[in-house]
Length: 289
Image: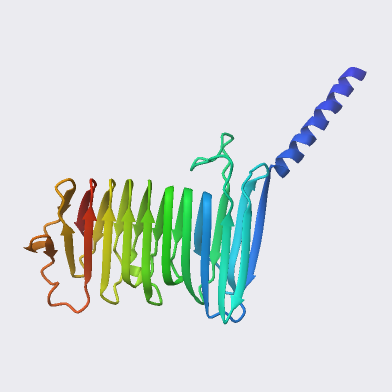
């Protein structure tokens, strides 16, 4: 009887220890930055390894940042926010880990994740570097002034489901050995967009509301890219023909001269989309929808 009670006590103690260890196995860093007198914000993200989410947050906040990590994780998160001359700078750096973890998390099924929610009351300029990991970027309802992103061995999706309330000066996307998907790019209201892809699979969908003429430059190395051009915008394609690459496009585009293809309404329109494309050993497919 005494032995039975003793073993029950040991079991209860072990269970309690397990609960405590599980409770402290994960920890979350939470930071909030309220809006004061800022008229614009610059967001700088330097992420070596990780999973990140960017989306719209509360209007009275500049940013709300949550980082969920394993207690034993060797990565260190640095966050700073400074205001100078009515311009705010949010700098987030995730120090490189001593081990690699990908989209599926570690061997125990966990995942370290950085979530950033941004206010919609001021124009925002983005500078993002993502080494290895996963990114989900939703720019819907944000005032996007500039957007620059560089990715390594990663998988990134990006979208903007509603028209950008301001004009975006420049959009720059560099994608290395990765997968990159961008949806509703026409809603960003950009003047210039540049995409550079290395070895990977890419999708650029220019659906959305164009409120001005736009220029796009696309360069692809060994990757394959699908480009979607909406029928609502007159378009021209300028393709640097390379016999090592594969190129195909829908019948809506007519060849006007060597390497130049236009929709029938392009010349008579004051608002139009011009896309210049180069491909090395990759493949390019252009759809009109």
